[in-house]
Image 1 (cartoon, chains in turn cyan, green):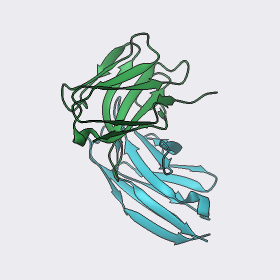
Image 2 (spheres, one colour):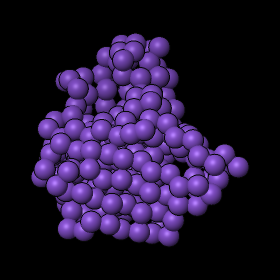
Image 3 (cartoon, rainbow over the protein chains, first blue to last red):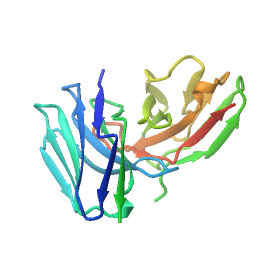
Image 4 (tube, each protein chain N blue to C red):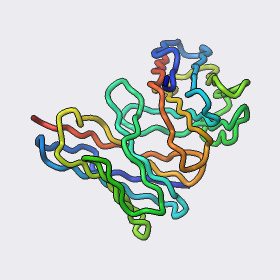
Length: 110
Length: 115
């Protein structure tokens, strides 16, 4: 079955700097890759997703890149703000369920 | 419109007891998913409903876990003879049609603690 690995597990950046989180997946049939942000005590919230027919997608300060050959995808957050502090999860899907990474705790210091 | 809602938000029970967790999906969403999230981990898939039927229950850990969705809307996750290892946050998500590339919207979760 699918396996998703996520790095780093923790990431601390200064406000205004960029943050990058990387994930790799094992199932070449996976074709959908969402990223979720989870704040303490809340459910995961979708922030951006990418489908396998594109290599990059951007939404304001957030971008995701996908390399299907290498089976990895990355989340890029530019101009980080303290409110970006949360746990971020990548996921992959080739069918009806999402397989999640283990999460990255992002801390943005003012 | 309203998002996915889950009740209760917290549930504390004793080992060996039976519990029911409820999920109200987004109106009109035909697909409903249950995930379990242990501390410091990502959500893990339990079961997926398409309409009233369980299309994939491969993530249920054992036969103490069961879920229903009798009218194709609200779903209940049922856990019999609870064990301390069942303690986790149980998340529900829904999507419009259940296609692999559909966005899944998550509820706030139910935190289950088994003493």
